[in-house]
Length: 82
View 1 (tube, helix red, strand yellow):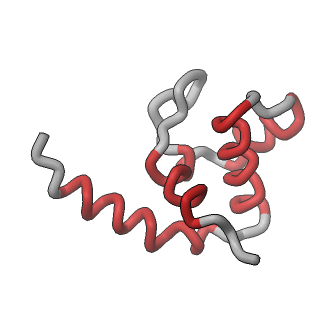
View 2: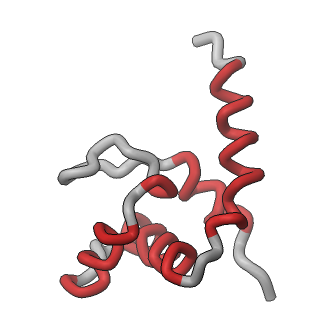
């Protein structure tokens, strides 16, 4: 069974809600920050699960999984007429 596409979409759309990297997309967080969470403890709930997912992706060199989703997101943002 592969990664859940819904989770992958969330990591390319959700922004970090607090801290040093507030407002940065979860998929763009540096691995050092994710490693810090891994050593100190991830937050509870959905955010923690998404950060753990990004930690696994980045520490295993699987960033290419996100490339198509990031490109789709950029394309969607270009047509956001709010």
